[in-house]
Image (tube, rainbow over all chains, first blue to last red; front, top):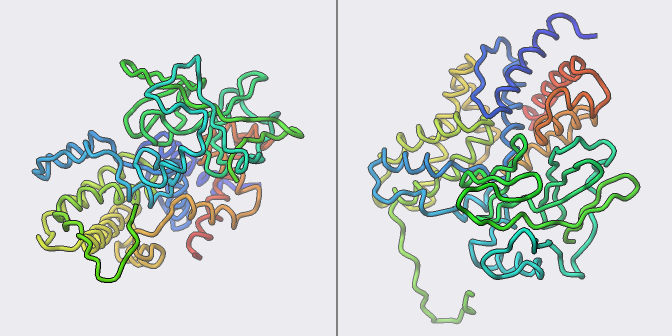
Length: 231
Length: 172
């Protein structure tokens, strides 16, 4: 049983965690060393939610202007090094080079043309010699309604979402640029350019006819969710 | 594709970038470094800005790219230590010592990998709770439902789990 002091600390820490997870700077006086260390590790955990965090284009533009730099860095797009350091190897598709080729190899059915409509939605299907099912460790019966679960299956990263008795898996990467989407309420938000997708994978961006998020093969085996990925 | 190297063949080396250009591009790395440690965008942007305004005007015109990045990361560590020092009321020197002990060169960290190592060292119930809460973004109520407990008990367990995670993090 927790004593009153432990209860008080748990309440205070939860208030800080809620601020962090809402994307706000935590503001509350921290009283002792264990609470301080717990907050710092909570910040680290909250910081791991984004696969490769990067500043918004607006922020970079503002900063470049403040430094009196003529060329706005925001226009340069994703830094290759930033992506590499953050470990988003598969997300480098649009950056050229060997990574793009590997990604393309994995997507024989994703048309190379400019766009795909929702009706002809792409499916991420690895080549037969690399394809394998991954056990995500998620039990279908325990999944919350419309709650995206991010999973990785080899080189494929996907959101698995339960809606009623239907289970859907779709790529977790934005179809505009290879940035990983972040679940925010009932949307999947792209942190790179403030675009969003519905939980069905359709683009919610006004004025952009973005392809829907490619589907990923998914099944339930022995009550557990499995996703088709690459060996 | 890189051509096969042959003896005596001359390759044109890329031009050394302007240090300011280089630094502006490296700010993506600095932001990622800071975000992984403060866990929220407003603080990460504020600290990145502090690093830029402090470090970039002091760059030598002929600084090599590696030196530019090393200087940016060193500045980022100082700025981060000051941030936590003010926020938590701890001497800056103590935090700087902690940061230099745990961060190595500064650029190496794979934040998700580091968090994974911390989680893996925890008992299963703590690990599951922190994964649900932080990595999957569950509310305390949803965590309680997933773990068949009450929100009040989940809150206490969250406190204990974070305290245990902090001990693991300190030990590494």
